Image (cartoon, rainbow, N blue to C red; front, top):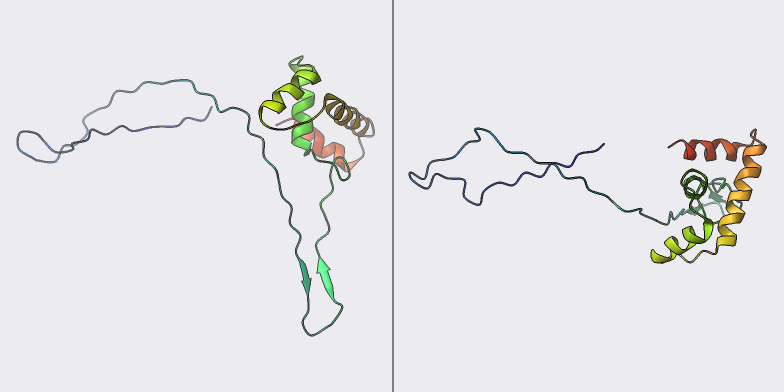
Length: 140
């Protein structure tokens, strides 16, 4: 488990009697358990188009990366999160949709159900490259 160390130094680091520098002889330490709530983010994929000034008509662009759902919104990690919450933690899709709404993400449970069903089909045809990425995301 990651640990964040906070060092709280006294405001004064010189001796109140002689004004000499103080040095550490020991320290007291306490621990508290903290939580960082789920963080949702949007991954923006920008693919610049490059053109040659000398050669007219030459335009190059990197191919778009494959997605689990062609043209779809979710990353493999998000779909894996939905599947894990549904089957491992028994959290119904309507509740997951409500939880997403509290983060300002409006997704209907039918959309989540489509993602789960699509992922199941991909896993069924386990030779597909998308299923390998989905399994990798599930194992994180």
